[in-house]
Amino acid sequence: MKIIRVVAAIIKQNGKILATQRGYGEFKDGWEFPGGKIEEGESPQEALKREILEELDTEIKVGELIDRIEYDYPTFHLSMDCFWCEVISGDLVLKEHEAMKWLDKENLYSVKWLPADVSLIGIISEMM
Image (cartoon, rainbow, N blue to C red; front, side, top):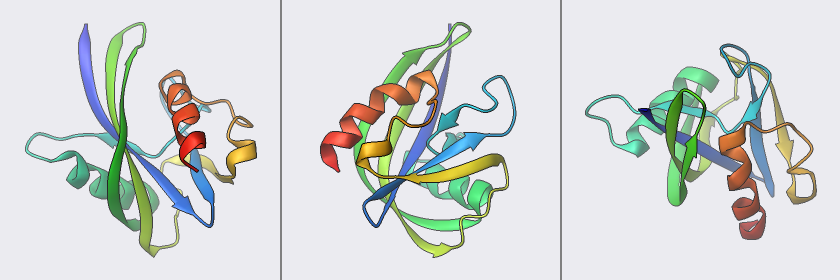
């Protein structure tokens, strides 16, 4: 099975977490944490900074690793490093996503998360 390595930014601001809704592809309309694939020669942190700049026109500071999520989708295995992040500069402009929401602890389950992201929600809610 093909393995895809990605990174995800858990952007925390004012006690809330940023969730984004996919605007394309097989998982269109599902909710996820923003991020993307790690390119050859990049560290996970470098990939995350690049992806958030490309997707949201925003510069972030990458903090501590929360967890590595391993999830088997029907056609590939996803390995996702998830980091706490904070906005340094930028206005979170949606370039690839349909929508975004800031969710507090009580509303983390109010969106339909993609399967790999669901397992992270419990971990995050305990840390908020």
